[in-house]
Image (cartoon, rainbow, N blue to C red; front, top):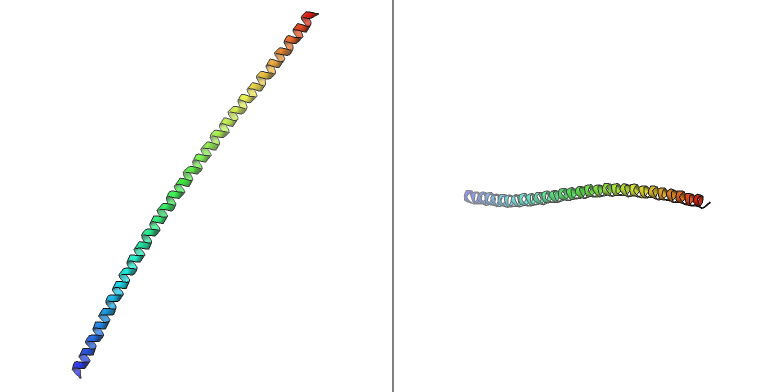
Length: 106
């Protein structure tokens, strides 16, 4: 009877040890899975940060281009205004010349 009882206890202990080993394996697998997920998340964060940097650089580049275009536009306007002034000056000189010619003919 004692032998049978002892054998049952041994089997129970062995079953518990086996169950514990299984739990350890499961726990280790969970840890590995968690680490893999963490690594994946870190990679995604890096990728996102890189995309944000690229976007920021593009925005700055576009802003610089807009400022350049604005400056060019202002320069062209100044040139246009200057040409308009020259045209008016030429018209006045031409008119003055015509008046002198008319005066000389009389």
